[in-house]
Image (cartoon, rainbow, N blue to C red; front, side, top):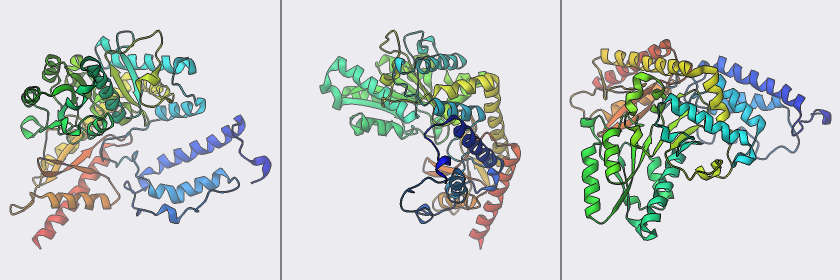
Amino acid sequence: MEENDALRAMDAEQLREHAHKMVDFIADYYKTIQNFPVLSQVQPGYLGKLLPDSAPEYPESLQNVLDDVKEKILPGVTHWQSPNYFAYFPSNSSIAGFLGEMLSAGLNIVGFSWITSPAATELESIVLDWLAKAFQLPEDFYSSGKGGGVIQGTASEAVLVVLLAARDKILRRLGRSALPKLVIYASDQTHSALRKACQIAGLNPELCKLLKADSATNYALSPEVLSEAISNDIAGGLVPFFLCATVGTTSSTAIDPLPALGKIAKTNNLWFHVDAAYAGSACICPEYRHCFDGIEESDSFNMNAHKWFLTNFDCSVLWVKASQGNMVIDYKDWQIPLGRRFRSLKLWMVLRLYGLEGLRSHVRNHIELAAYFEELVSQDTRFKVVVPRTFSLVCFRLLPPLNSEDHGNKLNSDLLDSVNSTGNIFITHTVLSGEYILRFAVGAPLTERRHVTTAWQIFQEKATALLGSLQD
């Protein structure tokens, strides 16, 4: 590269030229995304064989780097934005989210306090109040009330932050000597982030009580089981202090009964946190708002806008009912790190460029596609829908022969591997009541009915082959 062509740290015209090339590269990627295997087919360590073992001494051209991305990086990417991606939960990308991310990177502020960029703090408060109103959250969660919202990186950070707040609140009342006696409650369907948060918070891991949920409650936490556990722990000299409920569990999108759990939490003076990382986005639709009835009893509420709300990762929204209010908010005190990015820009752009009605249509479309897939599964007697579908996740399995020793677990594991190895779709699994269950999560913005139809045809074809091999 000629010296006068060298890339400067920041130059407006060089930025314009290179950014145009990058946008073209990304747009071309989206035009051809269906051509890639959804699940990366590379082996561990593949990239070390393709890249040099030390950094270049002198600058290279952007084109050379983009060529390497195409030839060496993209084969090692699992394509979360593919219309044939049905694994885990979605991680939405959108034009608005991308533009907001680009603008945030361009301004590149470190907004840990109001004075470091007043607009970053104030826009975050305003946008999260907008969202709180759209979700019909209690006014206690608004920044104009006693609490407010804050954008975290992930739901794992959100639950850690509120767990620390709850811990410190009760220790101020009871003294530090109570720490080994503090008890946390949740169902065994709760995300593993809660256990990790307990570990980081210095709480006794044996007192993180994950109460068994089963098919009798569609894997939701039973209020009776919770009440009994609390009574037993109090009788044993322990100190119940924190309850985590979930709306839309990771395994099966189970919905814990918030009104009943909220009453128990209030009676026993527990901090009541509601994790709606995935399903919170559905709260934007009036017909799903009832799933969040009882949220008024909670002390904190979290949803991931980066899952199903067209907001690029990362953007996890946490509301709390009470904060130690000052004239201005310093968001560094609402999170683990000091520094923070201008993440509210992309959420603001998503809300403005799509509007609430556009976001509702986005969610409803995926729910309709999941209902269509559920119908296809139900029509094939070889398969069974395992739990009722509520949102856009279908949990199902291939029924084993009657003489199956492991209840068809290996059969379904083999079906998952067979389907994913085609590269044409990607799904993941869970285990419910000891049974291996296939999860089909609709949520990629590019997914259409035809993609769901094709996916089901792959399942049928691979199931036929597997069942045939059992009879040979």
